[in-house]
Each structure stands twice: as structure tokens, then as C-alpha cells.
Length: 92
Image (cartoon, rainbow, N blue to C red):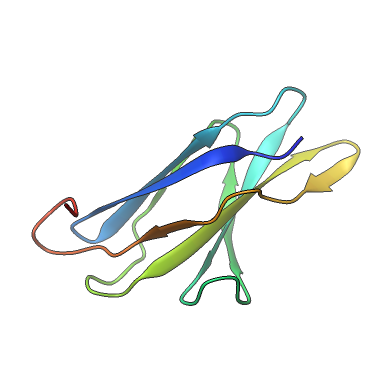
């Protein structure tokens, strides 16, 4: 299965990602882009359903996908998350 319900919550200099976990997944790969459905850059892995991205710039919109991984391979993301970090804190 693929991770679902990806949410991207913007803050000051950060985006906190959360998603629905998948039964049988060993870990999740997190990817980011500055354009929707474009070429994504690998950010890191996490064994849980969350990831804090603190390598962002305020005022720039970022797009995220998360894939699940286990011994049989990697599954793509169903959702794309989007967030624009800002110095004022969480976006409205």
C-alpha cells in the first residue's frame, strides 16, 4: 500500500509532515520539490508517520510526497502535500 492523508503544516522556517502509516512498511522516504508534480529531491527516511523539514526558507512554497518501503520494494505516494513556511508561524 501507499501512504495516504499527507498533511504539510507550515511554521517559521519549518514544515511538519504527517501521513497515514501503511501495514507492512519498514520505513518511509520523504521527498520535496519547489514545483507541483515535478522532480522531487530525497530528504530522508522515517519509520513513523511524521517528518520535520527544517531546511526550508520562509516565503517559498514546497511540495512533498512520501513513499513506503519494505523488503519487497518501494511504493509511490497517493498524496502531494504543500506548504509555505512564514515568519508569522502557522499559515491560516
